[in-house]
Length: 296
Ligand code: GLU
Ligand code: ZN
Image 1: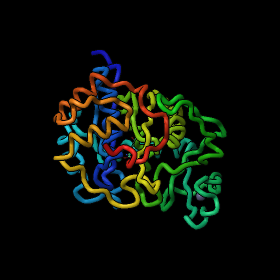
Image 2: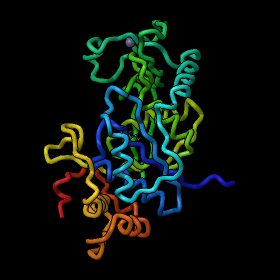
Image 3: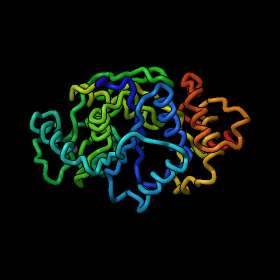
Image 4: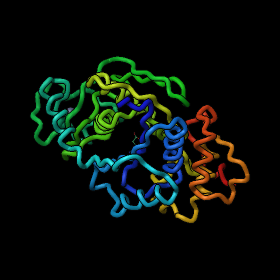
């Protein structure tokens, strides 16, 4: 069998319901995949049970169904991938590519998220410690399909980053890279809030000998006060009876000129139009869009 030329995915975190911003990301990844006859996978990023909202997983699947999305195959769950993550961390640790860090949050406060390497050569054991990956003092750059070239100097802009937290939970950066490769994902379409995670993910791909997918970061939908949707307060679930209008608004956010005839169309009709007319080059080349400006 030939390897499909395009495998995309949507990878929600069940810390809350889907909101309009997640709908925009889901829609973009769906249309980008289906417009070229590609596969579209769904992965539940349930890595952090304490921050999971009860009922969110089911509500996310229901909302996607109500909005007409059809994913290929079974939903993948990161909670079922712990063996793969754990084995990789042990290997990186044994090879000296990762190390244990016992720094407290308070100790790291002055460094504003850039780890200064305090435990790099301390030789701590894995017990009761975070595991950090060593990063090279190098630039990691890529050409985003919407945002253009994006580069980060890993030493200066990130520092050695956590791949397993001190409480034993696996980090998003590690899981996302491993799972995208495991699922054969060729194209990643997601919100621009993850643009500055991408260089760390490129480094992990290189280190692990994994293929590098193509990236497209869609504008992040923000509230009038500049906050990310769903972060400053819990957003309500996407209502089934709003599927049509919200899909049309999401198309508008993505720069796709949906015709007036779609006004009373069903979710499936709108997605069908979107697949046929998808043009990623029309997506606004900005990092954020204010939701208020998208009202009809
Ligand atoms: N789970 C992440 C989120 O909901 C998305 C991960 C990704 O698309 O790479 O923000
Ligand atoms: Zn440390």
